Image (cartoon, rainbow, N blue to C red; front, side, top):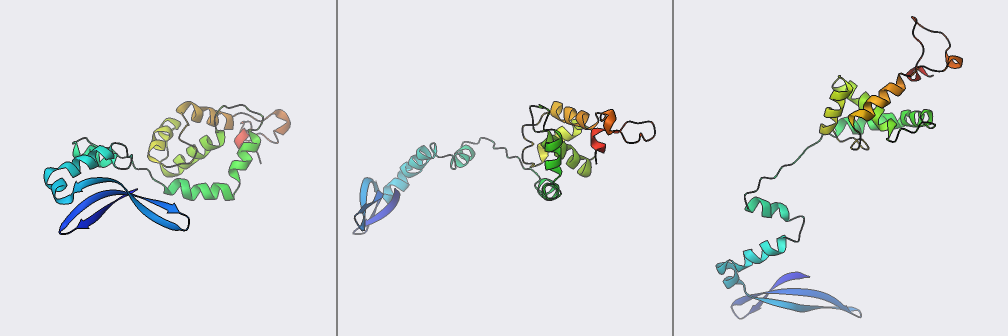
Length: 183
């Protein structure tokens, strides 16, 4: 459906029209005549009709909110870090290795995304896991939306778990090798 102007003499009328196919032919059928365009504009009825119809449109709700004086808030996020390093992470197959190592564990969250988020945070704005969780709110990082602070703590703790004795080659500086030290 669409709106069209139909001229009759020197007057213009506003019509709601629908296109229908009749075999190979397409015909336009007038669904409703809204009245003379000049009168609709002068009386304000046209604006009222558009406002009324706008309530049913998600795209036009922003315009309606602005007209009512309601404040609209928008949130922006940084795309660069997640896109650039996400591709590098994928190309180096880091995510695959992490998923493979974590296969036997039942984390209940995407541990690979938690590690990616904390690694990315440490590259761009070094700080704690708590700071990484706050930093995440300003970034567009695929899969990180559902991560909470506890997930970051658990992922980092898992990376710091000591390897079994059979996998300990040499202990350096009195410290056992950890999950993150795996070749």
